[in-house]
Length: 230
Image (cartoon, rainbow, N blue to C red; front, side, top):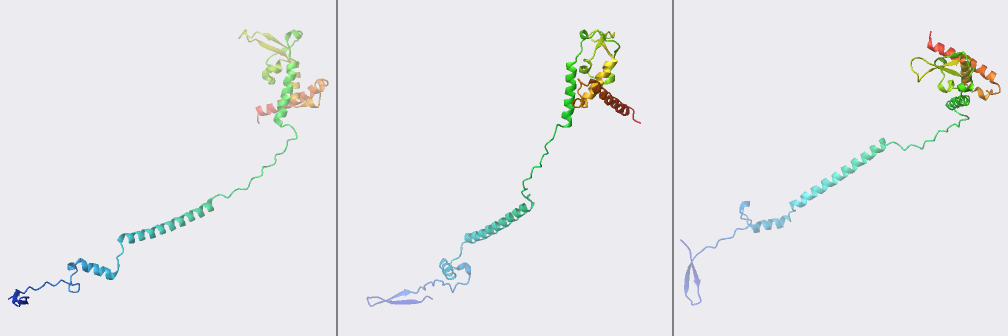
């Protein structure tokens, strides 16, 4: 049965009103389940515990710490690489002093040999023979260039006579006097030995040829030993 309220009105009469119990609003203490909390309760709890830090701020703090650790690690690795580079890098070499070159007191052996050969060729050029200059040459000898190892310029200084070989009319054979060939080869040996500095080949021709004969004989002995080894 519902209760009846009696309300006194201004007219002095009584008026009955049916009882309607008021619905009590739930408080934070009466709510036990966290699912039935209202927004006001959540706000009150948050205000009592303090403001909650945003998640993004916490993640940024972690990223900053990792970045600092990475920078420190990179700096340490760079320092180690520099230390290793200093250990393996070649030390700057001291400027090397150039070795002192000795000044030559005279010409080299090659220059001396070339100069002697030049003097011998000059003599051959000055004493070039032509058949019209000497028609009384006799006792000709052929094959001198092969046996005495002379060249065309050397052989052109002594008399010779041409003859038909039967092989070619444009290339006849030549015959030379043996004594003239001997004088020629002795003279050449003396020139190549440099005897013209000690003996005048024009004023003392006999001695110059004699010394050349000795040198040529020694050359023949050496060549014979080399061609016929024991």
